[in-house]
Image 1 (cartoon, rainbow, N blue to C red):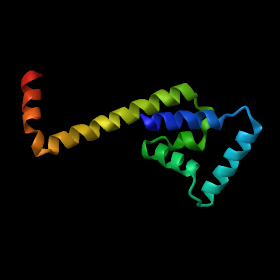
Image 2: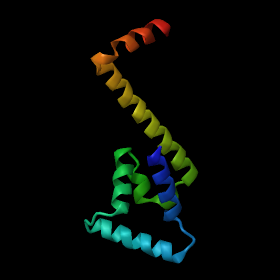
Image 3: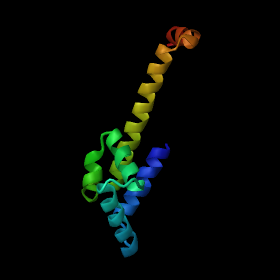
Length: 104
C-alpha cells in the first residue's frame, strides 16, 4: 500500500497551487530527463512498472481520484498474482494447498 500512498502524494504535487512547489517539481523533471537519479525518476519507474507511464507523461489530463483507485487495484491484483504463484510453487505449503482445495 505504500506505492499507493507514494502515487497519491505525487498526484498532489503534480497540480500544486503553490508556485514554488510547481517550480521545484519542474526542475526535478528536468533533472530526471537528463539522467539524474531523483525522486521523480523513482515515481516514473513505479508508474511504468505498473503500466501507468501514460499518467506520468500527462498527469494533468487524468482525474487524480480515478487514477489513484485504478493504481491501487492494479497493485493489489499484481500482489495477489505473485503471492498465488509463490504459494503454488512452494513445496512447504502443500498442506495449505490441500486444505484450500478441500474447504473450497
